Amino acid sequence: MRPVVLCFSGLDPSGGAGLQADIETIAAFGAHAAIVCTALTIQDSQQVYGFETVRAELLQAQAEKILADLPVKAIKCGMLGSIETIAVIERIAHTHPHIPLVLDPVLAANSGGGLTASDFIQQIHRLFVLATVITPNTVEAQRLSSFHLPHQEAELISDLTQQGANAILLKGGHESGLMIHNRLYQHGKLSQSSQWPRLAGEFHGSGCTLASAIAAGLAQGLSLGVAITRAEVWLHEALKNADKPHANGQSIPYRSAFLGR
Image (cartoon, rainbow, N blue to C red):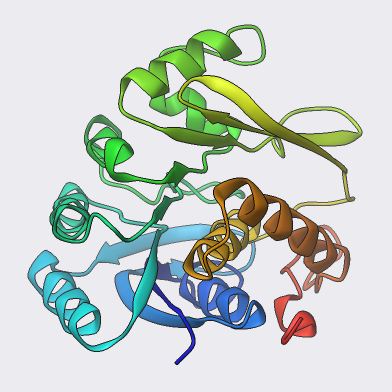
């Protein structure tokens, strides 16, 4: 069958982010998404109002059944929410070290609203050394480190690398300027960068979508650099064609328009 990406993410009722973003994106790249729901959230396309995590024992059991049944070629982690869920991912990654893992360290929604327990940031670094790549935006990267952008980028990357991150895709969507600048650091060194024209407005689920697209590429055997470039090109088109529920609110990427490409 198609290569499978096992996704650990939260359920966003609006369908803009989380598990629906994973499913639509991975299908668009010709892979299959298997889903473990880490949390139920109360949110719409504009804001997060609350969430409740799923029991770790249930997550572990679901993942083990999928890994025994389907040809999982990559794992993608989005919203984990609790340190108990971090421990589940840690056990699975240790048990299946040959499977690439894309870690999108979701801490909060773009519009605001926390998506983690209070002690989550102190524990998420346990997964860094197990991940093929972590994909923080600049806001998340600063919360995961003790340094600040843009003036301390070298120190920030060094800090995350020392925490165990082998590859860091630093996403520049939250920075100022007419262009969005993404950069990939591997083993502390800049190995790849890209620039994209900044589109008007805000987008709900763009980070989930990019991480899922990268995971699909890794599941299909692409190198990390190629998987990232292909994902970025595709994401830009999905954002250009995004749905806009409200005139001044966040837009939802139009992922299904590109199925089969």
